[in-house]
Image 1: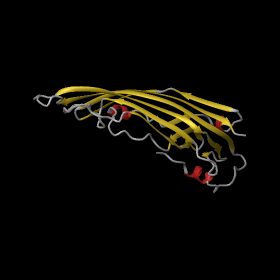
Image 2: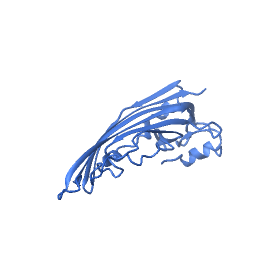
Image 3: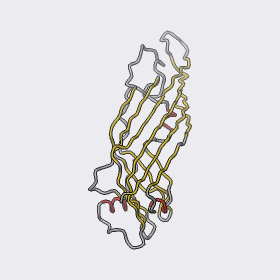
Image 4: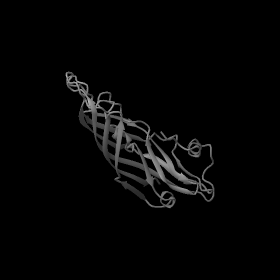
Length: 232
């Protein structure tokens, strides 16, 4: 996972002086809403679902994944651009950490290797599919470089608790990570005087994967809303 850039860490820890003359900054309260879903299908061409069969046969199964993220406690953040063009996202070590409720729901006919259940025979398989959730913090980092500040990146500190008997298609794991979001914005927006900024996105993605005898494909859709409200 990405972490705060050195300058942002120094500022947050109070090791760098207050904003210098010519710097631009603004204080915000940030909230986040995310809805993500993906569907994957995997086919193993070398299965023996009937232990008595001599030649292998193909077997297919699918998996669905849904992830939701909701703000429990807003993040207080200062968007700062130094006179030399260095951007920083500064959070106070004295404020309670931002908290996000993360939930992941799965339904799957695949094992954790991405192969269909029953590929090598066996009876009904007990899974731990369903919904798992936790509360987690969030990191925020500048997106871009000196004199090329292009927004900020949000990344949750933790993923959902793992599933040990409810796998995803290999291609689903190649899709963009829903707990890592790049928000495009200009320095003028982030350090300006607007009372509120709202950023929305709904990107879709596709992927395919091959691992030995198993091929898979997947589609995903991410819908997010990031709101910045002026903290006076």
